[in-house]
Image 1 (cartoon, each protein chain N blue to C red):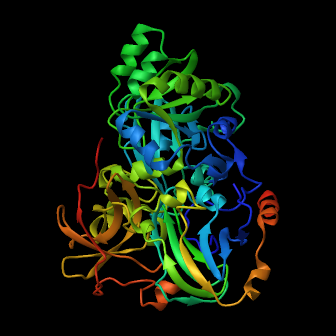
Image 2 (cartoon, helix red, strand yellow):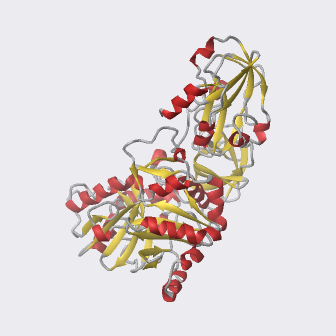
Image 3 (tube, rainbow over the protein chains, first blue to last red):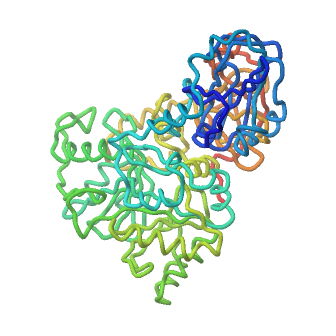
Amino acid sequence: MVIEGLLYTKDHEWARIEGGVATIGITDYAQQMLGELVFVELPAIGKECAGNDELALVESTKAANDIYSPVAGRVIEVNDKLESQPELINQDCYSVGWICRLQIFDTKSFESLMDSKQYEEYLAGR
Amino acid sequence: MLQNSTDNGSGLHPPESSARRTVLYDWHCRLTDKSHIAPFAGYLMPLWYSSISGEHKSVREAAGVFDCTHMGVLGISGLGAAQFTDLLTTNSIASLETGRARYSFVLDSSGAVLDDIIVYRRDTEDFFLVVNAANHAKIKNWIGAVLEGEVCIDSEDSGRTASAKPQVQDLRDGDCKGNCMVEIAFQGPKSLDILSLLIRDDEARMQIAGLRPFAFTETEIAGIACLVSRTGYTGAQCGFELFAHPEKVPRLWEAALDAGKPLGLLPCGLGSRDSLRIEAGLPLYGHELAGEYDISPFEAGYAWAVKLEKEFFVGKKAMERTSREYDMKVARIELPGTKGIRPVRQNDSLLDEQGRCVGWVLSCARAGETQIALGYVDRAALKKDDPVGLYYTARSSSQVRQGRRESTKKGERLERDLTGKVLDRFAKF
């Protein structure tokens, strides 16, 4: 499942851009591939990162995977529910399973992101 | 994400085109999403159908059925079969009764473990070996080379060769027509009830019910000729492995799913196969045997399967030395595993009560609210019920930047992240 209006990375993160703030998560394809998530390492509030920097870490029963920031920014909020309920990402990765919010530094990093149609095509080509 | 994964087989990559489909591939596609099917040992195998934890639970509480048709099945038969099999493997074949199976190892002359196997004796001179899928080609070639005298089998007598010359057949995918057979496994407390539903003949039903562990018989299940063995790789007290002709296996699978559904049977993938064997303490070649630490059968807890009193077997000289001088062992360890606890993984460090590193994790799986790890630890440092500390090794470069260690050495002091305890080496369920 791919949602319209979000931006996507080739590594299967999504970003929802609203008024200078980006909400970040992983896509349905990613959560399907990873299976049952059992642990999420959230970034510290205030952490600053460039586009494609390591942002968080999710671990399923089989694998640990880094999550890279789709945009450059500063972490202003994290979904701390994920610390005790990592399965929220499996339940709905685009809403209750969001990971963190970033204050966006600049929009330059958007250029490498895909819209929902491009991401769908990208998935189809895999 | 998905760039820097420590993933060990769940495969977030498109299936390799070279991977083969098992005879149950169409069933896997029907029962789960294609993204849960990945290459393993040259075959496209299901990692899970519904969920690893749900499938694990079904085997502990009801029953599960596994596609094991990727496992290698090699026949050794004809004059000299018993003598040859006894020379090839570490356990006693001479004392193995017809209709019984035995766990054993195949070594080279230097004592390196080539595989762990189950030897089945169908008749005085008729055996078959079930070998790991990943080692199938290696073992097949090894047996051929031993038969032909192309490899050294005795480190102290390079002229020694196998005198017996039985016939060796690849029963999984060789040119064996009617003889071919591959495996599916039925495991869990309800597995006998489900099998019973598929047997029409009362006498055959009694025979299956009366099978002792590691005994087998040949009968019809759902009208299909099967070899039914009371063996398994899940630690289930009640569990069976069925061998049948590959063309018949899809029908057997369908009959099992139909009969088992009302009793809670689930089809199970490689994920739960792994978590179940870890919980039971059973080794996986490359992890708890051989592998990175070159773990010997003695360290793995299987001294009883290496019969040093035999006159000869390939690797015996090396095993005599190894049996006297090993200081590490495989231990089964319970660690907390409630939600929000970071999963323990291969190469995390195990600590004694003083916080000194005494070994490393080889495999780990979740079982309910706990995690069960198999660790490679100092033989003298940890005993049953001893507390064990766990230190997470760094999983990402940002953890390294924060000061977490990428690797550790024995004897180093480390700060524990979790505390668990040593369990019995093996468990039955």
